[in-house]
Amino acid sequence: MRSVVLASESPRRRELMNISGIPFSCASPKIEEHLDLSNGIEEGVMKLAKQKAEAVYESHGGNLVIGADTIVVIGDEILGKPKDSDDARRMLKLLSGKTHKVITGVALVNQQVHEAFYEVTNVTFCELSDQEIDDYIKSREHYDKAGSYAIQGKGMMFVKKIEGDYSNVVGLPMCRLVHELRKYTEI
Image (tube, rainbow, N blue to C red):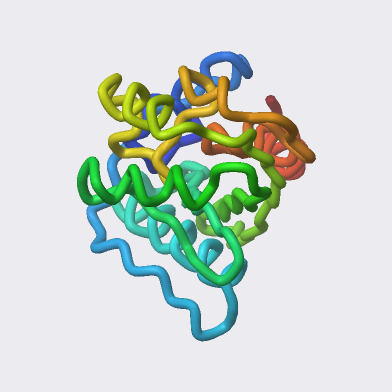
């Protein structure tokens, strides 16, 4: 068994880990996801990431488990995964021509390690026409994506500017993650 376990079903996170060359296995966290904002957004995503990692650690004892949760924030509104096409359309119209934050909480958990951190990336969209939004929704790429877009897919055409870690927007801040993993493993 590999010493690092990714507590995620996300194909995007798996792809980032594969690209990094870090040996890992995957396990799905069996938890009900609830974002607790009582201590702020950043604390909330780190707490949820930690809950995911801890849930997987219970069945993969001894291994270092990576948990992650990514959200999109514009103003005071948190944009999770869209409920349906109308919700996706609403989100994309809200993001059109504006800058939003992508925040990913990451947790590393095993018997000795209980660490969490977060990464913030600012993403600015160009102005989107109703037709561009409708065409994107028809592609169905928006499903299962926080903020209703995939920067690594067709959604890249909406991005005018990015400030911060690109991989964070995909779902896992690899630069910071690798730096943190080196403290506890030989990768």
